[in-house]
Image 1 (cartoon, one colour):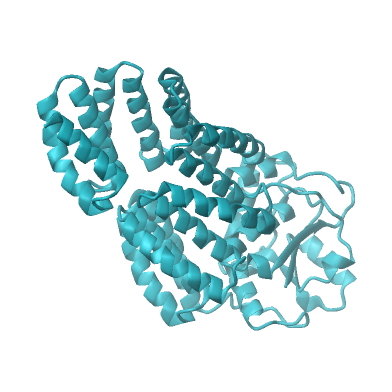
Image 2 (cartoon, helix red, strand yellow):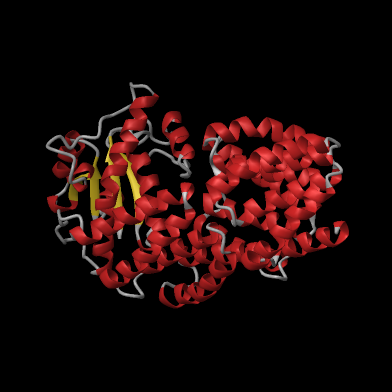
Length: 477
């Protein structure tokens, strides 16, 4: 199926809509079944990149910003659905087509849009105008996605008349519930896992057990189970889900690749970093071929391959790979993008492990304000950077400051991530270690006696982190 977005110059509205919609298709498991293009009705900007304000906003939201402006031609006009940004473009399109049924205003897919369906041109405006255009586009995309999904499922021909129903009310409600539950996960992963447990049953009832929407919902459910502190359960689920994706959608479907990425991640989190690195290494060339070498998902696989190499003990190779990934992320996503900051975090950590704790402290000190600005002071990734700063402060020779920093951090992690979350337990272990280092062995032993059974329950008796706590307790007791 071919969907084309059309505006005046093809540097602001239509490329923004097209590139964001591609991400919606990817998340819905439809990326490889729908071709998305965009074009302008004038040739003034032909061959130019997207407006820098459009590109910056796309990068901020994790979307690729690679774009070259095109002029509307017969290829664009042959699309199954042509979406005009305003009434002027709609009129031009209808003048050039006999089949007007293929032309729609983008905002006609937003049931709350009202009578004015124009997407305003932000070109002569400010950054706020571009953000408002993105909001308008995002409001229309759920309805468009449902239309496209139905058309693909029914193998709609190019002469079919687009439906104005935006899918059934039940399906719209399900999609909204899923969106809200996913947003809940950053603040409360356990609650997100509970909500997705209910949603899996609802999606199975609405779509069937083997529909791509159901498979996607199961994957998100498993992800939040892991983030809520049960990596072993998450790994068990993804071991079941990946073969299902391969059988139902095919081995190179974007949903299959996403599930494989999750399988590698939870394999490592469950205590097998070497296998996790191997799984990432096998996935990387497939993602490069299917999505492109600079797609955000491909960069995620490159980052995690390096991460698991480091966790397996090959810090030098990991650092070299991470530096390469950072350069691409800064160019494609921007220096302040959360994904770019994640790679900076990982580089700082591995610099410390390579033998330069003072440099690690400097890198984390520089990183923390940027991560707080991008994510907020209560975000779990920001708390992880605080943990690493405390750790390397101790390794650089200031154990007392490390203890104080970890004492301040531990209650925050308990509040944000839960008392038994693996990362909370990591901070607790580190607090015990540096307390012992500073001479408070009695307090450290008491903490470790409480910590060990929790790590055994959460991670398993054979997990490296459990063994780490057991060994430290044996040395101190």
